[in-house]
Amino acid sequence: MRVILMLSILVMSIYAKSLFSNTSQVDNGIYIGALKNLVEATQKTRGTTNAYINGNESALLLIYNYRSDMKKAIGTMESLSLSEDPVVNTRATAISRSLITLNSKALKLSSEEAFDAYTENIAQILMLAQTISKKNFGDLNPFGKEAATVMMETILPLTENIGQLRGLGSGAAARGTLNKKQLYQLKALLAEVEHLQSVFYANMRTINAKYKNKYKDDLERSLMLSEKSIEEFSKVTKEGILKDAPNMDSSEYFDKGTSAITDIISIFDMNNKAIMEDSKGWI
Image (cartoon, rainbow, N blue to C red; front, side, top):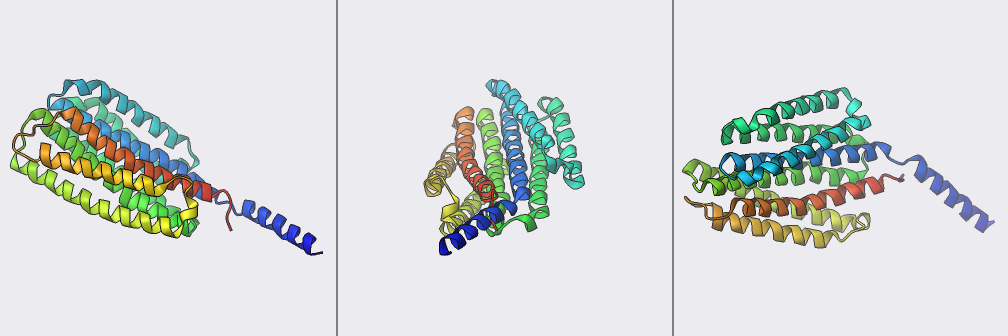
C-alpha cells in the first residue's frame, strides 16, 4: 500500500507541475530577449553612427550590419503573442516606425543630433521593457520577479550607460578633441556606470545565493568576467578618452565597450534562461 501511495503522489506531483507551468512567464521571457537584442543593436548603431560622422569612415559597414540586427529583433517581437497586447503593440509600433525614420536620415544629421535621437529611442525601448515586466509581474513566481527586476531595472540601464559612454567616447577619439561640456558628460556617465555596476553585482550575488539551483551555468564565473571587462573599460576611458585630446583609437575603444556590454548581456541571458526553464513546471 505504501508503494502504491508513493507512486500516486509522484504521478499527481508530475501532473500538477505540468498543469501549473507558467506559459505567461515563458512568453514574457522570449519577448524580453528579443527586446534586449533590439536595445543592443540600437546602441551599436548609435555608437558607430557617431564614430562615422566624426570621421571614422570604417564604421559605415558596421552601421548597416547593426541596422539589420535591429530589423531582425523587431521582426521577432512582432511574431510573438505578446505583441497582440494593445499597449505593447502601440508602443512597439511607434518605436519601430521611429527607428526606421531615424535610420533613413541619421548619417545626414550632426553627430549630436543623431546620438540624441538614438538615445531617445533606446529610452522608449527600455520603458517598453519595464511596461512588459510590470504588466506580467503578477504571473511571475518569486524567483522570476527578483531576476526580472534586476534584468529590467539594473542590467539594461547599465548596458545603456556603457553604450552611451562607448558611443560618445569613440566619437571623441575619432575627432581627437573633447570640450568641457563633453568631458563632464562622459565623467557623469562613467560615475553612473560605476554606481549601477555595484548595485548589479550585489543584487545578482544575493539572488545566486538564494536561488543557486536555478542557474545551470557558472553564474559566479560570469559575474567575475563581466566585472573585469567593465573595470578595463573604465580604465581605458579614464586614461585614453577623458582628456582634451583623446589619444585612443576610436574602433579599439568601441570594441572595449562592446566587450563589457557583451559580458553583461550574457548574465541577462542566463537570467532569462533560468526564468524560462523555471517556468516549465512549478506549483
